[in-house]
Amino acid sequence: ISIFVLVCSLLFLSVKIFPYSRLAQQFYKFEKIKNLSALDDPRICIWDCALDLANSSICSGLGVNNYEEKLVEEYEKRDFKQGVISKYNTHNQFLGFLLEFGLVGSILLLILLLSIYFVSEKERRLFYFQLTGILIISFFFENMLDRYAGCATLALFVLSNSFTHRTLNNK
Image (cartoon, rainbow, N blue to C red; front, side, top):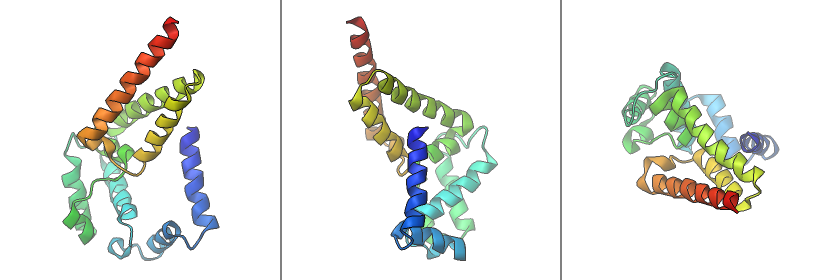
């Protein structure tokens, strides 16, 4: 929760303190025109489409690997040509899980990440604590678990974290 609050605060402050930054300009441009294809950074458009799509299937999700087709259909409805051509995914792991698995899957992902995060903090394992924080922040900007490399990295990380936990408790 502290990382989420920190990320949200930094985003808010960057928009308010640095009104001429690229991120702030995208938010202001999006607020004024509401035209998805006029924005320079497609992530804001993608997230807006994904949130609208998630609202229609919040409980159960759209199913594994089904959300990308529906997302492209949403891009077509909104005349977001760049999204249709490139077939963008959500560029946010949490939104991706919300679309695929619904609220239950998203909550399970959060429980997994936050349990590792808080156990690492409690046991003062700085490496795992920092690595989990980086992973959580990365999930806000990329769908890492949609690729084999992301899944393998997370599996290796959870496995090594649990072995370290077991080794420390046996001593």
